[in-house]
Image (cartoon, rainbow, N blue to C red; front, side, top):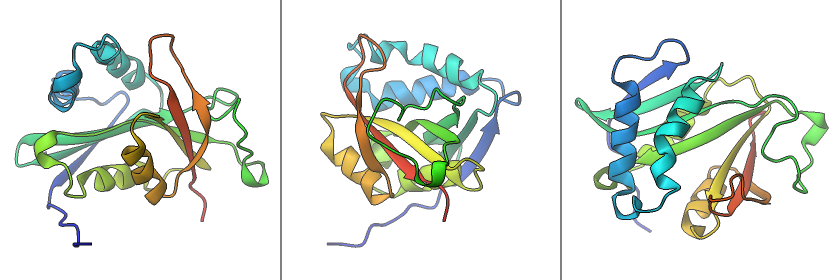
Length: 179
């Protein structure tokens, strides 16, 4: 296996209550580029709603990767309220009762910057220094390579769920944030 070349990029951090003008549109543009072949899917067309929903949450954090001034990708999420963690309803049992959970809602890299380690950089930067016990994310079960990538980052599949009637079936992936 050839070593992976990681492009040097600039990572910028953004937080709830301090989002710059144009932030929302930047994420929507990256999403549209990333899902250009699937934008006829009604669920993908709801992405602006998700940006508004997540960015309004207390604790929302986003990391955007830039190549010069060009946004190449982003990762964002927020802490989940107790009792509303996505792993609830699966067979997952937290170790030692630790349940504070950070939801990784999106990790996305534009096609021309993929396979350079940028997603890993974004994900790591998003979770670095988190106070929660666990990270959770959802991955479409029809994308086993993406699920494998998350497993290589320390996630385990806890179960499956369909959070919205029109959403894909997702694998619920959980990772401990405690050493």
